Length: 241
Figure 1: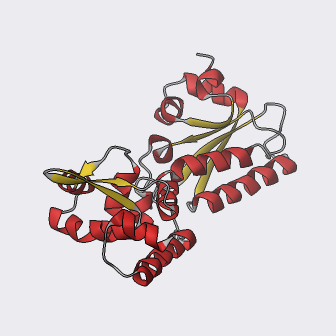
Figure 2: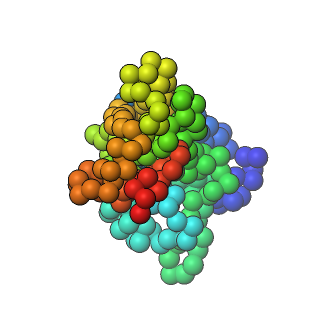
């Protein structure tokens, strides 16, 4: 395996050095954790700091080969910084380099095991929404709808952002129903564990939600416009429009 890595990257680094660096990077990415909150806007940079994280974040967003200068510009780093880091990423196998005179081009090595962790980090928002969607299916009684709105829905959430959610209660379920309240609170805590961010729940009955969504409230218009339905009917369906 080490021989094939050396041939592919075309470097003279010793096999032991390549293996140790590669193993360290894979181990770091595999066990990386957000310290408290998730920066859904820049999840790769939140875990992999500095120039390396910025470059990998750009590479994770495209399958098109990029020249060093263009990659540096997109990552908002200097060409000098990129030129110091990219050989290390190539050496580790996370990035593949091809020579297209007069410049080298770089692309994320998507079959590389460490690169797959980078891709998973880049898709943190979508993965989190999928998981809290699955968890919402366990709320009892079943909610009419669960809609994520605000900065997370707009793709603007950073490490200071809460996850804002509106949970639509069936009209025949009282707001003081103990089973309902405990189930929603259990889901909220689980969603917070999944995302790493505080989850703020706005709970309303279905008929009330329909009226509010047909009104002119900026909050509810934002829910209707930007909301991502993770369970049940959409805001548009609730509004009857």
